Length: 504
Image 1 (tube, rainbow, N blue to C red):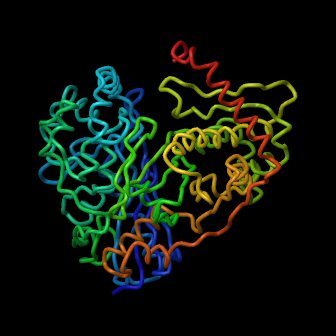
Image 2 (image 1 turned 90 degrees about the vertical axis):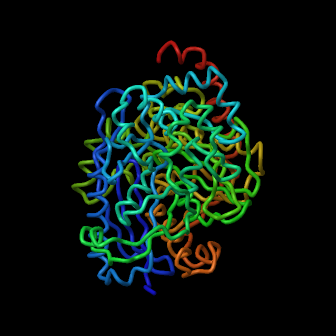
Image 3 (image 1 turned 120 degrees about the vertical axis):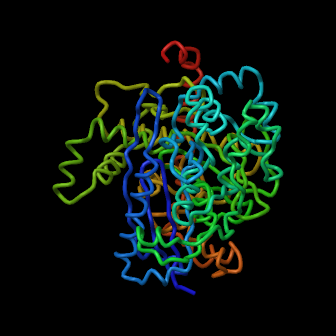
């Protein structure tokens, strides 16, 4: 058996391939971007063939840069963004462009199902909220607007299932991913005709592939895929998982005491339990990669992508200057934030540029600015607003569990000690940062190792492969300061709620 594992991570914009030792050391990483297409406002698509091409290129480059023989890779697993939809025909060819997980074309179907109370009726089985980019709504939209696409479709896949198919030629869905789509009964772990019937999409049941578990072997690398990727033909490929599960595994989440946060494009806040939570105050309950556990998720697109917007729109000159100096614009942002004490700025930032966790029509804004405020004050408000967005989700979670002794934080914000300190101070809880930069790929590699019995269990795999780079303790003296700031944040939300619809 080989001494290395590969994890492949297909996010919303970037495809990554990473090779790890059996001790979890990152050997090499390669990534490629795939353009997101917006043929109409609110639409978000990607060319499926280009997604596979860029992923294959990333795999080949990762192998080349690693300096190892591809035959030394013991197994591979894929992870990727959940929801959206990837359709292939009987021959395995893409039917149309992939529809991404932030597409909103099917909102009218969601609005109707909410109005009719279908979400409440079906939640005991699906255990999650519904939104426009879930495949239930997208299938309904395609049936009514692109009947030819539906006619050609043989299989409905998720992002990582499509990549696994390209590698193996075998069609499967995987439990963690499908359990987040509102297409199945999460409690039984099976497709349920009643769920499809509730959404009026019963005719699509035969398009849903057979279900596999995260660590099930779902095929081997084909000769054609080996030629494109540089992988060895016959290398086993595991089922893989939803990206939220990958982050959970890479954060060492193996029992009910822990809480993981992902501060990236989405602000995800999650924990696992042997008992599922079925409640409208929890955004999603899905099946976790470790059998017998459910993953409870509270999340929204209200996290670190807000900083990316600010840098793109207002810090291009600073970005260019830092690049010439060999530095990073993110280091500059951290320096500016640390130059302002939390008690010296009462600007509030609502982190709703790309989504909201308080209502579908809520918008982002800065409240409390005056002429003496600087970029440093605005940046601190953005950092704090993102953390308050996470706090909004965690308050919902705490209805069902206690606050953990530590929080495990991943995502872009975790790379910033200043931002991590704000998380620790707001939550008044120590924050642990998992070691490594490609945690989605690491989570996939952990599953690959379990699949081929490099480790006897997930717990053993995580013990071998997961480490933490640092822990940041909360400043107890900041407790009252942040309690007051978060109180103002919530008061602003309450005042603005009646006008969101008017400015949508």
